[in-house]
Length: 418
Ligand code: HEM
Image 1 (cartoon, rainbow, N blue to C red):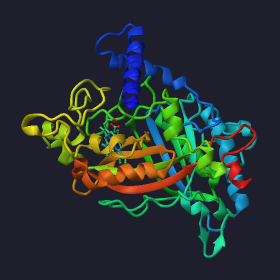
Image 2 (cartoon, helix red, strand yellow):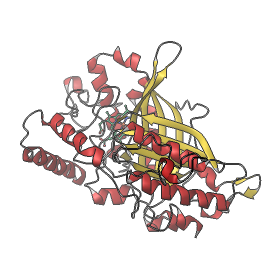
Image 3 (cartoon, rainbow, N blue to C red):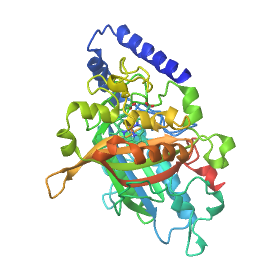
Image 4 (spheres, protein in one colour):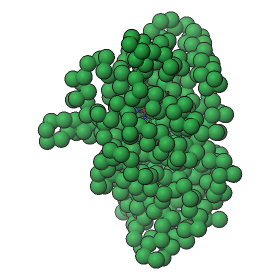
């Protein structure tokens, strides 16, 4: 099966990389250290065919924000906002301040153009990714707010209600979104703060989410991180080094339409609360059965090592399948879902605790796919049968169309208004 072969191929490459560095057993940690050392200086270009922050090696930190346009905002306001955001994002991702910093901006009688808290910090691998929500294309009170109704991608509609969804007020939707990822939390927060400030009067924050640790790898150069259940997460993810898979599963081809979205993608965000107190009282055998992988190595319960393709047909004692019928990796696997895959790029979060002393913790799930249908298909199969559901709860949801990258001299989403 080609998918299995390519995984094994990737493993071979990753292994060669480690061997090349002269690292033996336990090299995982050394690779992680090497990546961590290299990252502060990393700067990813903002302009390009695709937006950065999708196949970019997943950074360690996230600040995600959804915005709504002001009730009286016009089409001209929207365009000027995207223009201003584009210019600011190009500066920020290069590790530069917005405009001149401090008194150099010429006036003590105005607030500085840049808020200043990232002054002296390197680019830290910052990427800023913009998306458009379904409501941007909606007609409000009979009027087509921004003259975009006819440009709406037919697939850009609210995600369906999935069994078990417990969505909370104030954690859903949005006209626009910005995903800021960096290896320094101060840099990611500085980006969202300044982009919100620039939007003042035209758009305001609807909801936002901080993430403190990546839960996926998007490149074979990265060691697989762990989620808050302590399991390796991102093993079978789509990797940047598989361009044919990225083309097939992540980028919207021109043939799919609309034309302005070609080379873009669809972003799904789900705030998934994890009841870690219940999980922490669950025996190891059950924890591993829930995922269908071992906790230490991340290997499928059907045998092998982390990157071995799971064999769902293998049975053990009493003819019981080695990977449970309700195991997360079985139900999420493309074999179960008509070949549908997605590029996962989520983050761990802990937002304090509730009145009962339980952490408000979980996974802020983000995935990029060519069509929202890929996510919905997998999520429907998970929502119905996944053993993991006993320990998780989906409390926030949003879908955005992510336009292609901007050309220098132009702005994000320019083709939408052409
Ligand atoms: C695989 C954790 C929610 C889709 C995995 C793996 C873990 C994991 C540990 C195995 C390692 C890997 O291949 O990455 C979680 C946790 C979740 C969650 C803790 C919620 C808190 C979701 C959701 C979706 C999803 C909502 C999509 C609807 C996938 C896919 C795979 C996967 C596609 C790879 C399956 C394969 O090809 O083998 N997840 N996941 N996960 N998960 Fe999740």
